[in-house]
Image 1: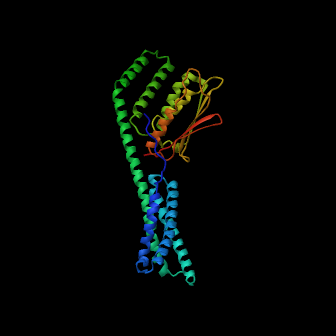
Image 2 (image 1 turned 45 degrees about the horizontal axis):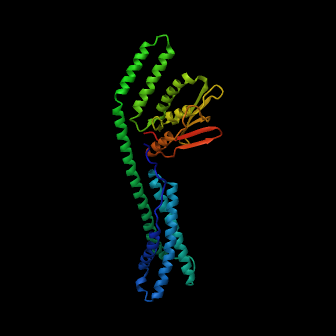
Image 3 (image 1 turned 90 degrees about the vertical axis):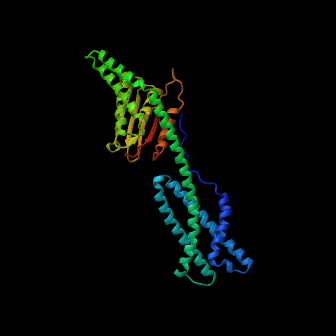
Length: 351
């Protein structure tokens, strides 16, 4: 049963925050500026209205800035960078707005530029208060939302781990039976029949890796590729020259990690769902580039139709879910273009 995918960034419905928060914050901003000493109700209301305009400007600008930075730095490990940018830009914007208001106020009262530092700093400090409050509201909401998602993801991982352990216990007899059978088969094969001996040994290596990888969250790319090479060698016995494989992997990428059996699943899908004949050989390309942070599996797209039910996409969905649960830095990409089917798996950081 596939696990639900991680939700994209969603923003709080802040309509009530705006309708209630702006008037209240505007009123609070007037208190240090002597609102209680104003005797005229009209003057107080006009001052409140002007304060609401200024507060709304700060609020909407701060919200837009926070959302833009969250889209730019959405991951948990980028929180510190996002907060630094948020602080620096808020200080800059607040300083410019405060300076602009000061200049307009001085001009309306017959004063001249520049605004004095003694007047600018208190106003800047008072304007920073609502700015900080606004950012705290949105950042706290986002952190709470993120905490809820992490709790759900932890529950999903625990359920998936328990299910895997149960399946491993249920199949505890199968590995011994299969390995004993393979050893018996190897002993029955004539010593001079080296291709058959090699095939049995490779089959045992494949099954051994599958058993070991089932309990691992990630594996080094080098190990996964070594396993895939053995897996493809078994299929080359069947397909011969009808299967052509090209592997281009930078040595710097071999230390990166991938979800176990994820590359093998993509290779298996290519072999299962596409024609591989002398007229139309199946071409497989495996490549990794640490600069882009992706491992790519691509194959010529010639779908098989005879004797094969149409694919449901379950395998690809499961691969996506596994990488989402592993907090991959980039999403799994699936694309079809120019007669090629391409899947890109994000390379996970080495431990």
